[in-house]
Image (cartoon, rainbow, N blue to C red):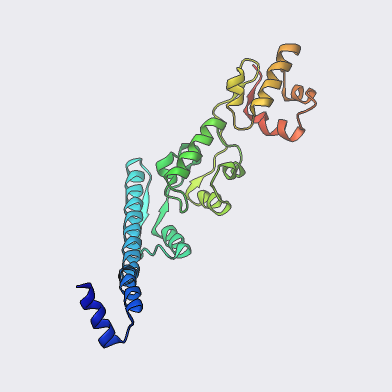
Length: 227
């Protein structure tokens, strides 16, 4: 069979035996490359369909949770046009904006640019922090870009709310170090100073620890309880 192919290529195509072998080896690659564009197109269509399904699921979840939506005709979903998709998604509905402090990871995924993983990190950071008192704190979450953080406030009402404070005079080393604004080393210094000098009466007492900067003290002040 192989000899027949080589004879045919030599007779009709003018290939030498070496050229014929090279061409035969090249055929599988040509076949694969011929199907690559079709495969890429199929993969993109699958991604678009999955993204659209997730979007519909998010809308259904929001309705279930009592968020009022005013819908308009759905635009054509084009995964290759991020800017257009973002604009269209904002035009699809007008949210009855709920307070950001009440948003969960499902609700956050309605914001363009926020997927399941990012939404989970935002909620975890908010819980570990004890609540946000400033919009800018959203930008501290790993993976949240500036434009994404700004887009959140198109969908949610920012309500400064600190729901958990750190009892600095009673907290253990582990509890202090678990706060996003306090490193393990800083927690050790706080414990050592408290043990030696007694309880802290206000944030001003933290400034007695010379290694702590005023900016850092002001940063953690809203999250401290001096009871």
